[in-house]
Length: 317
DNA sequence: AATCCGGGGTT
DNA sequence: AACCCAGGATT
Image (cartoon, rainbow, N blue to C red; front, side, top):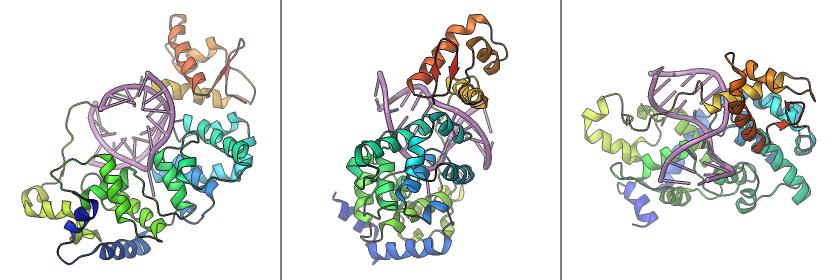
């Protein structure tokens, strides 16, 4: 089935893609949150926001975003700052590799492109920590290009509105649908609106269809209205109990975070001796745990998050 | 395709 | 306790 047939099929009842654009863009202009990264087209500020927002909720990013930009107001200030300082400003956001990669990207832009921000997706994806989503988001939100990209919100909205609820659709097909649905010239607002809708209305479970501007044009809503029992019962889609998430406390990730947090407390340049770091990170630490600790440190070292010398462990300068 | 990578909030 | 979240990189 072609993309256009698939989209047209949604609107066989006299509703066109243009109506879909109108409905969502109108809703966005009325309901959108006032978020700082929507008030700028500075590619540096857009990039910082997009990296922070990777797997991290808006409410948690907001205060960190302001502080980070105050400390590193431009691409150059970030590129020239000590990495330790960048990692410190990342506290509370998690996935600390993002901080290192963000600075590496800033340095690469300065080194490779003379500080001139790349505009096209193909170049952006070559930068560290920038994948297909972030590259598309920067191209669209900073340079207002008509590009489609997938994040968890856009993916969910596109699937519900455009695809058969009984079928599974792969990523490539979803991206093709998103591309075909772009309103040329207004993709900035369109992509923002898709994300805002997925975040505020078309949520993962218990979507608020009654206040959705796309309700009458949504295949998922139509299907669930057909079988009203499923529509009435609250959980739309029960999580399958297979492959459950592993406990976080005690995990590798947990202790990596503890190590970085301990190192952040140190004055700049100071190192943490291995025998002091162990008990700081894990109260019941004994010398027998040294292999366990050094394995963690090697992993952090590989990610560029720590430096390990004879005197001990510290954040990279 | 799976797994790893933080950590806080929600249910 | 399980699940979610403006993903990316590695294997």
